[in-house]
Length: 206
Ligand code: VGL
Image 1: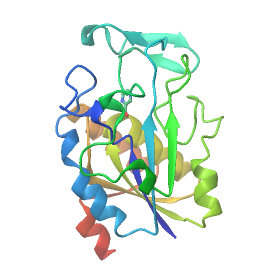
Image 2 (image 1 turned 30 degrees about the horizontal axis):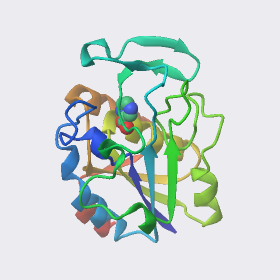
Image 3 (image 1 turned 90 degrees about the vertical axis):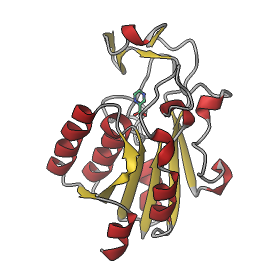
């Protein structure tokens, strides 16, 4: 069985939320995510679900990406993806959350800021249930897209590959925070055995 995974495709990571973590073009991926989902038996999603009291919160973008010394919170970030705010919502063009076969919320704890959607912590110890859900539903192949390529998408794809799934990363269904980050992430994913494809049209031909 094949599952399509929309990783953190939320408004907070798009220019629609300029004060949060806008990823250039982040609001342009819905069509590709939908095309990719049309090739799969299941559609699942992850959403960052943060709160304003998280220990990694800093007030300005200039103070971001500073190292932090909590076990499961490695860097500072500005407030983003807070539940109940517009930034928490999925990007325009995606289905309502109710339409997904499985949804996972992550980054809920104040002192945990995971990137990958498969584990709540940064050491891949505490499962979010994604891997178990996929296995229960006899999924062996996962098509991945979302935001941002160089953080949460990369980490999620690698976690899935490490768990034994065949993983296809749809590059047209992703956007990255930085071009250098995207390049390094792609290299890391290839090393992890992930198949990079240009778009859903290519996926349809496989
Ligand atoms: C993400 C940075 C901080 C992501 C989340 O979803 O890629 N990036 N928090």
